Length: 404
Ligand code: UD1
Ligand code: MG
Image (cartoon, rainbow, N blue to C red):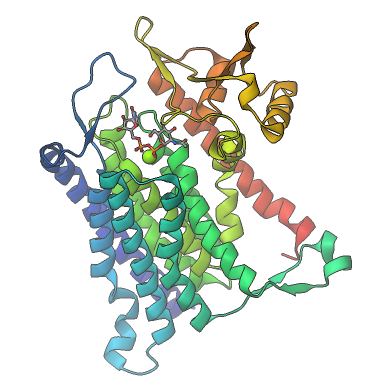
């Protein structure tokens, strides 16, 4: 009925207006704040340019702060009726909202610490786990439902539903770790980090809008509150991070984004759908496994190699002696070679030159040297096509696995 629809849409409209303001603010703030970052020694060099000055790094902290402040101001809006009528105040919903913000805020702080201190790999796994704790605690208090519906083909073995117990919490913690780091390792060319995050966020938003008039509308409304300001502030960042980058987003932004997606997925109970929007990141992660687990030597930077003469990017490589690989490393590389997934050159002395195992380099070994903006565009198109596939999997194909 009309009253309900109004209740559904009014906060979303207020949120949308605030998000537009957040965009205006961020677009004005970034150029003004840039010199302060360079002065504070927070800058990097663009490795894919002939000459690059000091490019301010970790500007994700600016968009993150505007995003959070927007959300802080927004806090009372969805609860206005209850505040005035003072009955049936939904404390559970309220604490959910605050915990979500706390987790994102915590991730912003830890991500910024990573940018300033250049933390090591094991910390990168620890940080999102810590940041997701407030959220998991609220999940425990509010739902504590660790029962999952078993996909149809497996029901004859496992039954209709399965209690995952503590493992459900482990899964949610790992989701946060995966979302944050997966974005961070599909990076290194101008505009890619923000671009992919924007595609994922937009996909989540579309999914929420489609589901907004369904039975789970509250969860999707909640997610929209986060997605709108996230998208507008990131759009402002995209403007400055697109080729040629005037600013770098830093790990701050990658963590912030991943955490935001994990938070809405967990609280909104659509974490599997969220993961579906990460298909390129999952592929990039699986492809990277040999290097991430040091089965194959992994240099500090795996971003494509810049060819100054052509002003194009080429695959970057890792060079090692064949005997350096252990059994598992050899097996994995054998599989990759058989399926022609890598460019592997071996000389008589057993010295191997292999491309670094990233999706970016994979595109380059198949498409040949590319200009940087072309390469980013191709990767973003892959991201968009994957999202469309995700919708196909989520809607028509899901009926094979679940009663929807
Ligand atoms: C991750 C990747 C690393 C990749 C790096 C690029 C893994 C395990 N790690 O590391 O391989 O090289 O991201 O971000 O896959 N930069 C550019 N152009 C850009 C963006 C970044 O030249 O468009 C360079 C700048 O020098 C910048 C630096 O990358 O200062 C930032 O790297 P950082 O985010 O600290 O690297 P990691 O996230 O640790
Ligand atoms: Mg990074």
